[in-house]
Length: 94
Image 1 (tube, helix red, strand yellow):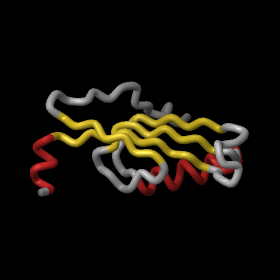
Image 2 (spheres, one colour):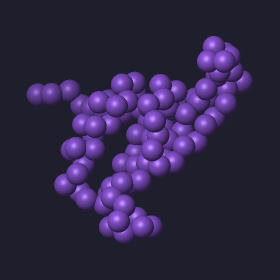
Image 3 (tube, helix red, strand yellow):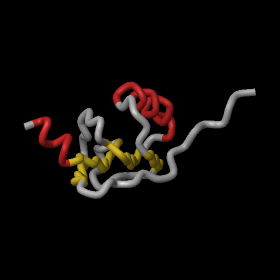
């Protein structure tokens, strides 16, 4: 019998950190703490999860919904991402 999947229920944003909210294409940020996604094709869920796991190697909180249509009928996927960058990490990137 396989172990139950592990789910992240909450992510705390540390004091002194900057919250970054992205929509559309999230990029490959290691600072991502939450990913919300909407698919229009239930048959694409397995592929979406595989790609998501290949692209994002750490464990942010995830939400995925399958909906009948997005605001533009030609879109099949919408992604919203929240990332948190500490001021220390931001200074290292300068």
